[in-house]
Length: 54
Image (cartoon, rainbow, N blue to C red; front, side, top):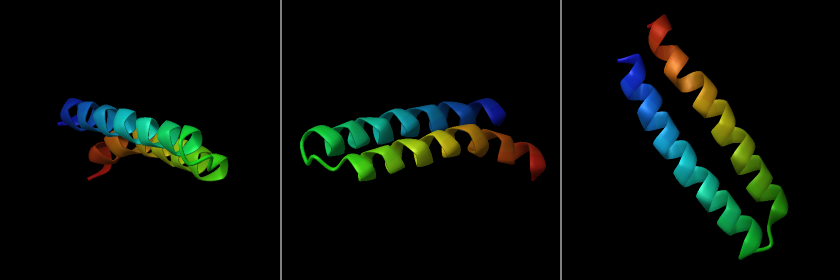
């Protein structure tokens, strides 16, 4: 189960970072893009490990 959640988290992380890059380049909204990348990184790290604690 850990590896399934890890793979899903990586896929979602990639899509979220792509959106953050779009937000930075097209909309010129750097603070929002940086916050999105930070939040995506935090979720990428903590989401798979939550499965060990349930």
